[in-house]
Every structure is written in structure tokens, then in C-alpha cells.
Image (cartoon, rainbow, N blue to C red; front, side):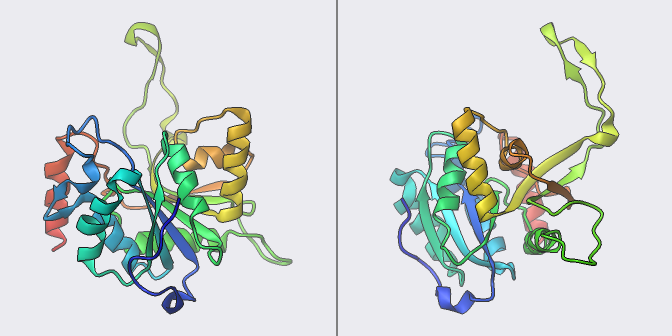
Length: 258
């Protein structure tokens, strides 16, 4: 269930064609923060506020859907949204039992005028507004190719931020023994935002539900229906807060940005 806009005016953003969906429903069990990690203070602000600021400043984003448990909505609004004075309209959607259910709720809550969604983990506070814009623009540039146009890949159904793997990766078998060493040149680390046409994501969620398929990220759902998803090489500092030792590093990087 979505609620009314709490910031901004949708009319001011008619030229902005993408809606952000920020997933902030995790309980942060590995971090051990009471009430969930999204409201934990990091460099002076609630963790999720940093993502809200980046999407507010992105030139391609005209609306933000913040997905969180309904019982945390008032706290999220009062602590993480309203103090920021954002220009971009923000609405809420209720988190589901899984991340997949939560991002689906966020996509379904996107206003009808937006044909693109940029899905982001609220626990990645280092995302930059220019990276968001690059991802949206890459999806638009890789859309249906008209006569006489050239593109090195088929029309795109999604764009995912990430980087080529730099560490050697191992496939592990029983008892923790190494089973094989995949070719690192074929592997990437993926992050968010992950950007898709709204209609593609709706088909992907419906197909996953029908097949009982659970993906590890939203791109895997689009891959499951045969979609073409481009990996966009973006900065490696887009780190995620998962365990306590992540916090000091991320705080230091945020403070370095001023």
C-alpha cells in the first residue's frame, strides 16, 4: 500500500522520466541494530537518508518510492525523510516478507507517468547522483533500435551498476573444498541501482511468481524471462552496510565527500 506524497510537487518534475524505488525493509540482523539498520546514524544522518539525497539530486529522477515495513513508516518519515527538505516527491510502499516482494511493491507503487524504475538498496549510502543518471541514460540509449541505428548489443531490458571482478573467485563443494576456479574475466560484482522499464519488471515479477522462482537480485528476474541486461562499470566505492565493520569505512568515505 502506497501513501500520499510527503515532499515536493510532481508537477515540477514532468521532464524527469524515472522513478526511484529504494528498498529499506531489511531488519539488519547481521548488523545488530535495534529497529533495523536504515535509521542507524551514519556520518550524522540515518543510513537511508544518504540514498534519498542522491536520488533527489539526480537529474533523471522525478519521484521516489521508499519501501519499508508499515510499522516503521512514521519513524522513517519523521527521521529520514522530512528533515532533508527534499525537492523530489516521496511516497511509501509496504515491504513484503522478502526483498523480491518488497521491490515488487515499490515498482507497483510507481506513479503511472514513469516508464522507468531505478531500484536501489537503501543500505548503499555512497551512491552518487551522476551514477544514477548514467544508468538511466544507458537504459534509454540501449532501448529499441530504430532502422539504420547501430548498437553492439540487442535492445536492453535493464542496466545494472557493478564492476568486473578483481579477486580470484572459487566455487566451493562439500566441506568447503574448492570445486573449481571460474574464469574471472567472465565475472562481475553487481550493485544497485538496477534500472528497468516498468513493464519489463512487472512481467518479470509475474513470471517469477508463476514459476516459484526467487532471484538474488532484480536483474536475475529479468534474466529469467530472457531479458537483455547490461552491466555498467561504475565506481567501486558504492559499498553496502551489512556487518558492523562496514560502518567506519563508509562513514569515513562520506565525511571525505564533505
